[in-house]
Each structure stands twice: as structure tokens, then as C-alpha cells.
Amino acid sequence: MRDLPEAPPLAVEDLTISHRGRPILDGVSFALNRGELCGLIGANGSGKTTLLRAILGLARPDGGQIRFGGGRRGRIGYLPQKVHVDAYMPLRARDVVALGLDGHRIGLPLPSAQRQARVAAALDAVSAEGFADQRVGTLSGGQQQRVFIAHALVRAPDVLLLDEPLASLDPSIAAEIAALLRRISQQMGIAVLLSAHEVNTLVPVMDKVIYLANRHAVAGPVAEVIRSDVLSRLYGHHIDVLNVHGRILVVTAPDAGAGTAHVTLLP
Ligand SMILES: Nc1ncnc2c1ncn2[C@@H]1O[C@H](COP(=O)(O)OP(=O)(O)OP(=O)(O)O)[C@@H](O)[C@H]1O
Ligand SMILES: [Mg+2]
Image 1 (cartoon, rainbow, N blue to C red):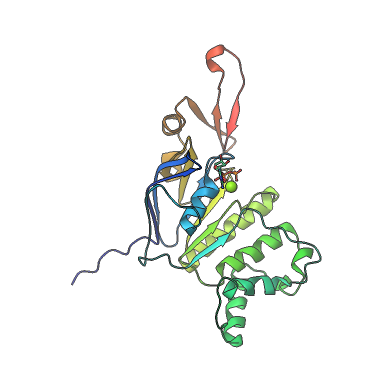
Image 2 (tube, protein in one colour; image 1 turned 180 degrees about the vertical axis):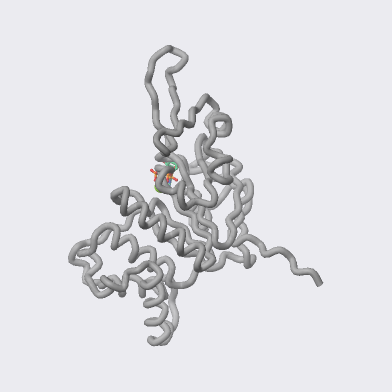
């Protein structure tokens, strides 16, 4: 008997969502394979968090389907957009990671040896052993982000969703975290979807991009999506994609018709 091709761990088909009758996303489709890292790019209010929450089952779609490889919503790791940590919160980095094991459910916890092994493996995956016993509030932003990623990873998810994990990090630290996520997706075979405003940090690590604008999305490899013709169709007006010193600039001139030179950089 011939093996059927493995279903992608996450497939979104023709998803439509509104908030209080106002459409937010319309006909969004994409699929993520194991070991793939995908950037979800869009401006403020374009619907990135809404899409991630729909995948988690926290926002109800008006139409379309969200399918998971195993049929039902399997293990999904999630790092929300803003995690506030008080400097005096009496939790070590290691404790924060351990909360990811059973903080979400009621029932008997895992035996402690197994717990410790899983926490140690997650800390190792993000290279955080060196500060695992420090209070989380005393860590730098980049170190905290590693700990939160370990928290989302500790249950060995099939799909890892991260909402703007690079925001508020210095460019060099953001690039480090992006490379770390790339390694995690490849080595652990996880489908990783992370949202961002800025595309350039992700270009070296992304297999795929989902670009959100105007309630719609285009998805595919960077070279097939971040193009003037494709983005102009998405936005419904002319968009330039410039390559300046190896960086991609997505530019619109909203007043071009009036002859003014206002230029807006898009994500
Ligand atoms: N619970 C809600 N009720 C009503 N409208 C909402 C709700 N949540 C989000 N919205 C609206 O949906 C739109 C998309 O919001 P969303 O937070 O998904 O965007 P985003 O791309 O994540 O933005 P940001 O980059 O600022 O995080 C916005 O116009 C927002 O005002
Ligand atoms: Mg958001």
C-alpha cells in the first residue's frame, strides 16, 4: 500500500474573521509544513494577532477552515504579543519554563524526574541553561525572550506561534533570536509561525512569508511575495519594492497622484 503524503501540521483555508461585524481577515489561506519557519508580516491592526488567536481557537472565524495535521487541534506552543515581567516576581527562568508543562490544565502533574528532563531540554534548545536559576525579572530582554520561547516549547508542540517575539529587541539580538527559531524549527521539525512588522530581520531565516494587508493575505516564498506586482495587487494601489544595500524596502507614495513626495515605508 502506498503511503499517503503527510498532512501539513497547520493548514488555513479561506479564513474569514470579523470583530463586532467589522471584517478583519477575508479569505486567508496558507499551509505550514514540519520544520518550516514562516513570517507573518503586517502593519499595526492588519490582523496578525487575530489570525494567531483563531489558530489557537480563541477567536471564532465567520468562515473557512483551520486544519491540523493530526485532525484535531494538537499541541500548539504560543508566545503572546506582550508578556510583562515584574523585576521582583519570585520565579526563576526554570520555573517559568516548567509552568508551560501543566499550567494550562487541571489534573495530575507529570512525575518530577520527567518534568525536570523536559524543562532541561527546553532550556537547552534555547541555550538558556546559563541563566536558568536567575529570577526572570532580572534577565535582559533577549534572555527573557529565550525563556518564553522555552516555555512555549516545553510540551514539544507540532506548531509554534509567536506574536512579535522580536519587537523591542536590538537588531543584533533580534537576529540572534530569529536564527535560534530557525534552528528550533529545523532540528525539532516544528512548524513555526511568527509575526513581525519588520521583514528584513526575518529574510535570512524564513522559508515562507504571509503578508497581510487590506484584510487579505498572500503567502509563499519571499521572492514570490515581496514583489511590486504582488503587493500592489494586495494593497490595491501601486507599491514599490526596493532593494537598498541588501535591505528590502516596501514603499507606497499615497499622494503620488497629487504630485507630493510623501513616502510611507510599509512592513
Ligand atoms: N476583541 C476585539 N474586538 C474588536 N476589535 C478588535 C478586537 N481585537 C482586535 N480588534 C481589531 O481588529 C483589528 C486587527 O487587530 P490585531 O490585534 O489582530 O492586529 P495586529 O496586526 O496584531 O496589530 P499590532 O501590530 O498592533 O499588534 C484591529 O483593527 C483591532 O482594532
Ligand atoms: Mg498584534
